[in-house]
Length: 466
Image (cartoon, rainbow, N blue to C red; front, side):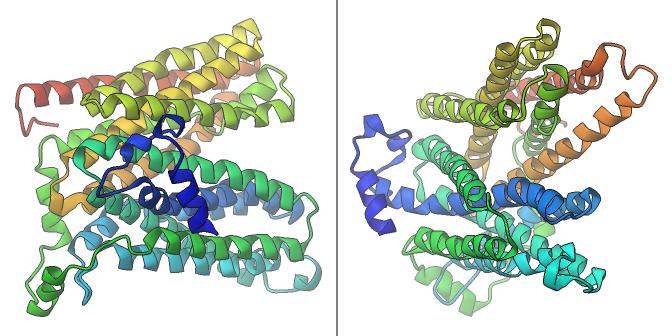
């Protein structure tokens, strides 16, 4: 049934389907849509970990918020290892000549295993009903293991899946392929958020087990569909496995990658820009509630506003980049759009205007979409063919680590200003103003570093000092 749905979507005229230009003779749209299913499973996992279970653990299961925060942050421990995962998939030798498939399959098993044990671990952690009297350390340990497994699986699947998409897509189609992959990620997040919310509305423990283990089964199904007959078997690579030719170590490969044209500066741009857009991720809804007196229902819709702006940003970037536009310039324009976006969000407090706030939020999502698409496309195009996995892993490591740091630091900065002597200087909006000012400074730094990178490339300065 899933295959029939993919084929039916693929028959829709290209002008009615976003990113259909990504298809080519070697990579038809039906195959591309099938490959993108791994992003749906990743989006589902992200919503379940950061959104649905965040609320369920605190409200329904009555787990202390400090423990919930630690559990949700555990998957980020694997973010710095994405470069190593990508490198391993670049150099992997198997009897079938596969490089990417074995690692996507391993990541799928990790993700599936984490979801399989997670509901039972959370029930034991809560100490409710049949779990009453169970040792607390068993719940904490088993829940931590389940979150770590899912985190390791998500980072592995997404890193190697994007590398496989890069292997298959012609260079001129890569911007559209990137756009399609992230649209499918957003689709997975939006659809799964709606379904999880509906299924868990009438909450009880058996329902929690059904939903999370259903996510485990869905992960397996989506990723198997994505992998099926996607990577061709390579006899030459299989013979290399038998020959036992020595491969460079990760340190050697990383040194070669960072000696490439401005690679370190590109990573700085990714880190600064992601941090600049990410500091306010967990503060938009509290800002709307405390400063603008928005209802819970109204602030919940802000997630859709950000996602909508990001989706438009991806679509626009894909369209422009496919015509040969410089991806670093696109990333720079994303940071430029972020400056008035956060200024508008700040100004909405002065006007006490909810529409102005929502517009600024959508604008910030649009800028983040341009920036993410630009930096990822730049990374794909600058990576040597033999180091695609390493390069995309480095992008993912810096991006995910910076996003996680942004979420954590945004809350820390807000609380620090709130409890300082100037915490009410401008009323309830004071701590938020401080965080938005830091974001503006980080985006300016991103523009400066990115502009120097474009100048270096324009004048052929291959190894400009970072």
